[in-house]
Length: 581
Image (tube, rainbow, N blue to C red; front, side, top):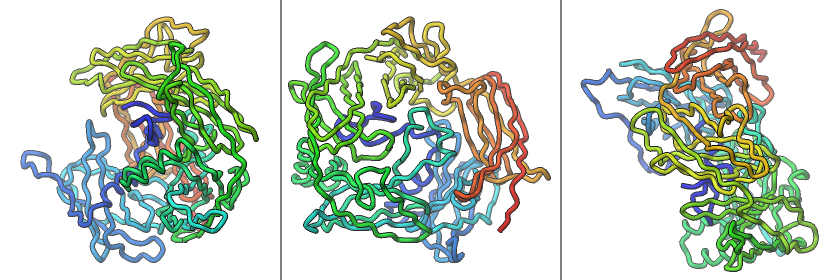
């Protein structure tokens, strides 16, 4: 497993998957993972007579607008704070919208319901906001769970060429602007993204596409003839492989377009989707004057870098696919054809068993070919590191480090995976300022400290100047974490369900954002954090907005100082805004 851009490279050729997307795991994704089964019986745990009495959770799933029962909805409980793989329990609703999940162990669960044609909803969610955690005590019986699902929106249409002929296997993607709450939890590099991907589809042989399951809101639509290796694997035909490699090597004559047919996203018009609405958006692809971007990549030894992988991407847009791609040949040369004018970030990466090289360059493409681009590996510093585990039964060789540059137009700048003895090597790290993140940690483990020589990296970052490399990057991980729990109430002492509780290190810097945590309150207004590093934290509660027009409401913050294996409790109070409807 190797990192890619803001996440992980699973394959040098077909890297499209980003794993470092934030601290919150989407329940929608997990619920959708069960959607392939034609008949899904209730998922229950095996009964252990010596264990604590098990629980039962039942209720109904209805439509939000009419209150009508939804048949065949999938209800899923996902264990929170599991040491390893979380246990998942589920059931399917009957014709009256009823469900029952049996033999569920006591604990805290993310609880959601989903159905094709509707937006997945979490337990006790208001509108489209994040819902509450479900807490269960031994032998508890809950029979009044209620989900009201909002109908999802659909964008559909047809893509044709200038002659009106259909274009098949063209990528159509929906982009949206990130919310203010999302930006609060983003890194400096992520905050440069003005648009993020929501969903996508590809046209069929008729040029038709259909993007479904969209939340109500505003979306920007992009259409591009771009290679898709995953589609090749699904379709399996030899011609599909030929089309894929042809697009990668030769390029396309059609420029990417944004609805309603413009070249720049700044000129695009958003499509507003209401609940259950289906909007049609057709595209006529057009040939534009495009140029060739070509050059060479030089390896750290000064020789041509063969088989390096290159991505040409538009800055400020974080999307799945749509980038122009190329690979270097035996001479280290690359050619990317039919590139429309604009500003791009050109990234090259190459790896073997011992080294991973990444370099990037901002380029401006005008109306003439750009044939002398030179990218070079090996202009940086090799940094030796060591991961130390304070605890037993730790597979250190499953853990790795990622460097994220804090400089403009930079994101992933290096990665390394530890060996069994905990040693690692970050190669070719250029001068700059970096955040260091740890990936591969099991539940219950946390980063206790990161030092580069005498410098505290979690406070001051990893600073490299003039190729200097003073010391070893030492990372200490531990299982001796602290716990913080408490309740969120209103001014009358009544518990507030589905409030967000935010915890930030004090002082907070761009280098210690991995110590920021967010969780939700359960049906009793209770929250819990575990596996926390010792230190000082600022903690407050937030009542999220149910709509984009509704402002969030925060409690007053409290300062908490934790020691190793500490257990503390606090109470946070929110004065909710009165419902004027």
